[in-house]
Length: 384
Ligand SMILES: Cc1ncc(COP(=O)(O)O)c(C=O)c1O
Image (cartoon, rainbow, N blue to C red; front, side, top):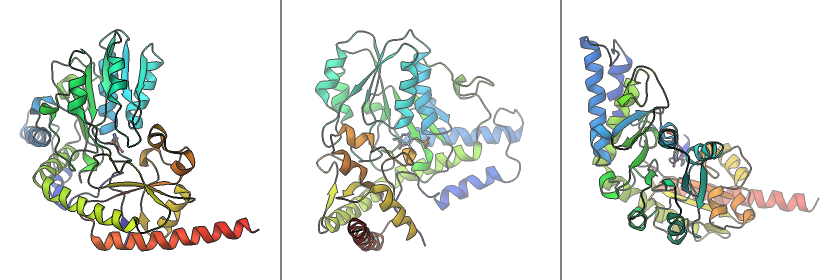
C-alpha cells in the first residue's frame, strides 16, 4: 500500500464527502438554473454548500464565489480587480504559489507594476519591506498567502493588516493551505479577498472559492449565464460543490483534533530526523502549519530522492508539487536565502489527518536506507 505523505499536493477524498456527492452524480441532478423541481433541488444543494464553505472561514454565504479551484480563484482576484481600474501597482510576497505569481506576471505585461516583498530566512514576510511599498502611490492590491505550501510558514496577517492601516489597497490572501489545518477567520483577518480550494481539505478536485464582499468590485473572467453573482458563468459542478461544502463542514468540526494529531506526528518526525546526519529542516523558527516539513539531506538531490522513494511506493514532493518537473530550485527557498545546492535537495513531507506514527517510522527507515544507497552510488561513481 502506498505510503502517502504529500497532503499539501492533494488529499484523498473523505468517504463521507463521497457519500454526500453520490446523489448528485447518479440519477437526475438538475441544472441549478432550471425552475423545475430537479433544478431547485440542485440550487438548494449549492446554497447549503455555500453556507458550509462560508462557515469554515467565518464569512457570509453571499461572499462565496465558487470556482474550479484555487488557481481560478487567484486569477479572478487579480484579473478581476485589474480590469476594474487603470493600471497601478501590485505587491506580492516572494513566496506565493505560481497561481498568484503568474497572473501578476501577466498583468506586468499590461502596464501594471509588480513589486515583490521579501521574506526572512524562515519565510516570514519582511514587514519593513511592505512598509516601504505602502508609501508608493497607486498601490491597488497586496497579496500575501496565509500559509506557504512548501515550508508551511504562516504569515502574520494581523500585523500585515495593521501595517497597512492607512493604505487604500485591497488585501488578498491565498488561504488554500491554511484551511483545515489552522483557524481561518475572514472577518477577523480583515482581508478583502481570500482563496480556498476543495481538494486540500479531503474534498474533490475541481472546486474552490474566492471569498469577496460585493463591495469589492471585480470584473468577471468568464461570461455567460450570469452564475455566481455574474462573476463566474457556467453551469455549476453541483457534485463537486456539494463535496466541497461537506469537506468544509468536516474540516471545521474536526479542526482541533486533526491539527493536534498532525502536530504531534510532525514533532515526532522532526525528533527522528534530528538523529539522522545531514538532515536540514527549513523554516523551523517560524510558526508553521502543523502537518508540513520541508527538508534537505546534505549532498542528496531532491528529485532523485523523490524518485527513489516513489520506487518504494512512498509519495513525497520535491519543492512545490504544482511546479515539479522543473529542475530549478524552489523559489521559496531561494527567497529565504537558502544556498542553491541545499535548496536543490529539498523534499517536502506533508502529513494528513489519517497519517500515523507507523507511517513516520516507515518513512524514516526508508529515508535512511535510500540516502545510504544514494551516497554509496555517488561514491562508486566518483571512484570511476
Ligand atoms: C498555496 C496554493 N495556492 C493555490 C493552489 C492551487 O489550487 P488548485 O489546485 O485548487 O488550483 C495550490 C495548490 O497546490 C496551493 O498550494
